[in-house]
Amino acid sequence: MPLILPLPLLFPLAALAEDFSVSGTIDGVTVYPDGASITRAIPYSVPAGSHRLIVAEIPEIAAGLQARLTGAGAATLGALSYRSDLVPPRTAEDSAALAAAKAEVERLEDVVRGREDAVETIRLEVRAAQARIAFLSGLGQADGVGASGIEALRALSQMVGEEVLSAAQTALAAEQRAAAAERDMKDDREALEDARQALAALETEREDRVYLTVALEAEAPSEGVLELTYTTPQAGWQPAYGFHLTTGDTPALEVERAAYVRQDTGENWEGVALVLSTSRPSGQSAPGYLTPERLWAQDPDQLARAASAGSMKMLDVAPAPVIAEMTAAGSYDGLTMQYSYPQPVDIASGADNLRLALDRLSMTPEVYAGAVPRLDETAYLMARITNTSGEILAPTDLADFYVDGAFVGQNWLDLVAAGDEVELGFGPIDGLRLERVIDGRSEGGRGFVSRANGRDERVTITLRNLTPRDWTIELTDRVPYSEQDDVKVTWEAAPAPARQDMDGRRGLLGWDIDLPAGESAEVTLDSNVSWPKEKVLR
Image (cartoon, rainbow, N blue to C red; front, side, top):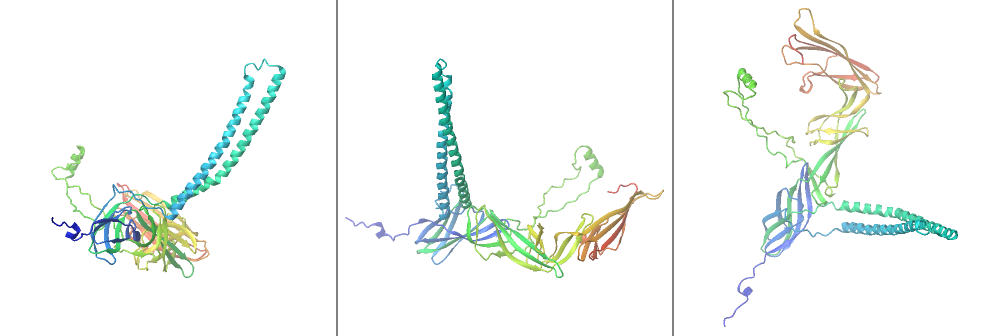
């Protein structure tokens, strides 16, 4: 009879493939203005062979999934696969704080239910006493009572009265005890509501998770860390600034930089290393596609005939194709800044809007009063600065402005690149009064045989300094301008403006006026416009 050996003795023992459920924590997060890149560290330990690591704790993966193995060992990565539908149920255990919060809610719910049952029991006594009163009140309506003798009626009446009084007293006493029990229950209900609120503050994580499998090959027993990096759109940050202006003989400006970070990824971030980046991975990454511009000419008579026929179709000319041009969205100027926060942070999902203080920058401002009397009755405190920080100041609607320690308002801040000059407003100067008066205006034909129309206007601007300090006022006003040869515009100003066509805007004039405390100044502006009589000025 031949000798039959067990299979393991005939062939080398092959390593068996296994699935290992693994879990880890978020190790670091880079937050962008719209989105975030998350790195998760997941320890693993496997024997030799082909295996799969199963991760079922990631709420959402938008894009950019990457994986690598760190640590000593001979394992190599294989395929990665994940799905968001038909995911097996999670069996994650509650944290100690969450379990305690749930237990406290359940305890207080039992207390409140017990007190409600006690109140209802007392209410039953009230209803029973009311039923007795109703019964006794109906005795006088019973058949045969009227035929009773006087003594019998007197006895019945006395008995009914005594019993009704006793029942009413019982009902009143029960109502008083029920009201007292309701008052005692108020504190328990408030405690229950507080406990539910505390539980809701801890239960910010969503149950939805993706199902991720990572294949690996281990020539020998291996252990290390699986690092997963992926992006999510459910996070972002917004810059915030505090501009602190100090006035006086030597003005100074301190810029306090901060950031508001939010996330609604479905899981809480606890003790993560946070990096804030101005990069926009979800935005436009290449220049816009510019299409050719095709021009053609057409006989006006053809246009008129086509219009009268109710159609703008071109005759004898092939229509130009209609191509929608792509327009570039607003973006940064190519500089990407990153801020590594020095301490680990905690951010609850869908709940926290965390404010992080970053740093402070010092700049030297040029302080002046900005005046636009055509629009305003007072001048405004302004500071002109050059961004010498070497970094951009990102655009935000969270820019707070302070003057000598007092909060004066919040406003929008546009992007300020490194080296750019910007003018910041710090509120009205009520003691710098502006007045703009049109002294005279004449309009119409000038001369009996003239074929021209004309308009003359004189404006007087008065500045009054009612403050106890001297001011340099940058005054802005305007005169009309024309781009047509037959519309003539002339003007004169006293004193003459220091700037014309300011910032490339035609007709804008600027004056620099030093106005001592208690003094006033005046600017006059004369303008004349003429145009052909047969035309209308628009």
